[in-house]
Amino acid sequence: METKLIKVNPEKPDLGSIRIAAGVIRAGGLVAFPTETVYGLGANALDEDAARKIYNAKNRPQDNPLIVHISSHKEVEGLVRNMPPEARILMERFWPGPLTLVLEKSNKVPYSTTGGLDTVAVRMPRHPVALALIKESGVPIAAPSANISGRPSPTTAEDVYEDMAGKVDVILDGGPCEVGVESTVLDLTGDVPVILRPGGVTREELEEAVGRVELDAGLLPGQKPKSPGQKYRHYSPKAPMLVVEGPVEAQIKKISEVAERLSVEGKKVGIMATAQTRMYYKTGYVISVGDRNAPLTISANLFSVLRKFDRMGVDQILAEGIPETGLGLAVMNRLRKAAGYNIIKLE
Ligand code: TXA
Ligand code: MG
Image (cartoon, rainbow, N blue to C red; front, side, top):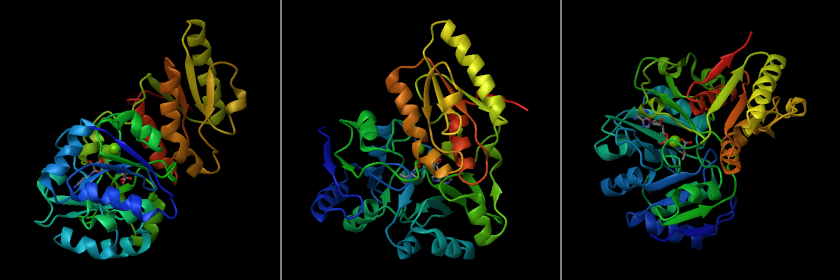
């Protein structure tokens, strides 16, 4: 298959380009497109065969359900069996935006989209290109992140091309993604809302809107996750990775020691540092992922830094931890999983 790369203006996408991509979706094909979180790999969510193509292109396990993307609040009605009151409050407050709601699915949604579950994950993204594509297609779009399963999620069209060339019909290039980590997946089918995957909308913001919100026990290492996608090794760069957590000074000391030792052994070491710490490292290839005082700069660059280390061919990645407040919860979830839970916790 030949993959067509189409550049689009991220703020004001040209309708001609959107129409080409929408035609592909309607014909049952695959279109990669930018959202405010990461690039998605889209297909008609109501077409079983199209949804199946997504699994093949990504090499994704069949039991890992897809998020259904819509372009207006009212489209959710046809996809779900009932709407709990918190769902309405959260939609009003956070849609369009990086929040995915898990609700009981209607018969309209095929099991191939939900990985055999009776629930469906729905999200209305806020990226103008995503919204225009969904609207012009006239159908809801199922879209996982547009990476090969297990790899870091793509935040640029180049990242998508690296993983998906020859496997998708069209890639819409709308430049880099703003948030850089995926949407928050919130389960609303129980008594209390439960975060299945931390993401772009923070736990603090959710609690301000609807009161108590729990974290799925599966988010702790060693537990069995409820969200099927959380149980696989994920977001992983090619090189082994170690995350060092604890007080910043202790992190710098530990990472420096490990980097020193590995360099002596002739290993190429990549250090994921921050704006505040990068100047303290004397060995290794140091990249600042962002500013500790502005977590959005960190989330925005996280996956692209992992991919950068891959392209550089480093033998080991050493990464600093950040506090788990606000967006830090999603950042640390991705970092720990990327490292396969290879973590040093310092006092
Ligand atoms: O930001 C995002 O959410 C991006 C962009 C493209 O919108 N999409 C994305 O999709 O991250 P994906 O497939 O990479 O991750 C979807 C997550 C998985 O962890 C999956 O298991 C979970 O959502 N999920 C989907 N449907 C679910 C359901 N019915 N119940 C529980 N978890 C579900
Ligand atoms: Mg993904």
